Amino acid sequence: MNMNSSYRIHARGEAHSTAVPLALTLAAGQSLRDVADKVVKDFGDIEAYSLSIDAIYTAVKTKQGDVKAFVIPYEVDFAARPPREIHVGIHPESMNPRWSSAPAHILSRLTEPQDEASAEWRSKCWAHLHELNLSSRVWSRGDIIELKQPVPTDTGVKEPGIYVVRERLREFVSIQSIHGGAPEVVKGLGEAAQKIPLSNDPRRALEDVHGVASLKMIKVGGDSLTAQYVLLAETVSGEIRPVAKAEFNERESLLRRTEQAVQARHDMVSSFAALSKVPEALTIRVRRNGAESHEVEFNGYDGPKM
Image 1 (cartoon, one colour):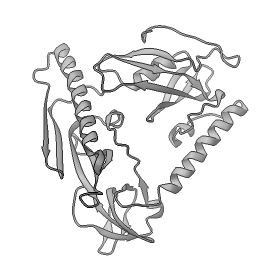
Image 2 (spheres, one colour):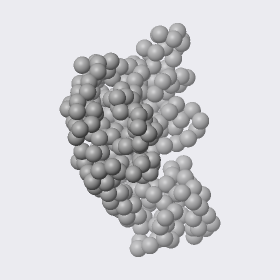
Image 3 (cartoon, helix red, strand yellow):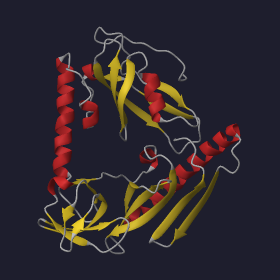
Image 4 (cartoon, rainbow, N blue to C red):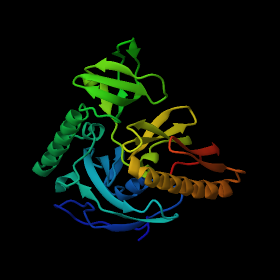
């Protein structure tokens, strides 16, 4: 079944697609957002969208004017060359789907629930967010956190930005900027900081970063046997975003996945350049300089988002 096919299944008395797996095609240059738009087109228009490791969460404004949540679980091999086959399901919130990790910006866009199952699903999502918020304040060595506001330190003030947790002793936390510099001790980060959850697979996270100019892996904690590594993406505007994290024994796996993501983007951009007649659209250079530094550079033109 291709993405131009039509499908409609009646669920709970509504003319809605439901949890029947669909095999679609993710063409070169298309993103999972494109898939979501196709899947929910019979419901209405997407007002908010969020991607997790196994599902797409959407807030959809229906033709009746209500805003409802739809969950689209998916399976796709991002290492495969495009076009890629992707399997998706379609779960309206009225089915109380088991995927219940919708972020706050999705939940806050929804209008009043119209049935008990929808209300129960939203409650599960809010409970998940509460647990995540609590766990995010249990800092551990090697955690990547984002300061939302300035915090006082032992030597001055740390401005908002991305930091690495170097050490923690009771309420005291030693943090260091991902740009480098000396660690500084802060007390009681509390609401000022949020942990950034990272997996050891950068491919999905990279979809949310526009205009990637380079990728660099840095060592953020531990000794030679317990070291942790974070993959940073730098955009053409100079913004730096952490996109993946690996333990010492996962470093090579992370590098392989990174190179696969780079190659997939290279193939996509090369195809786009050929169609658009953009000369030498992309040059890839992979550098492995020992255990401390690994860089993958995109030079020139980044092309459309994967």
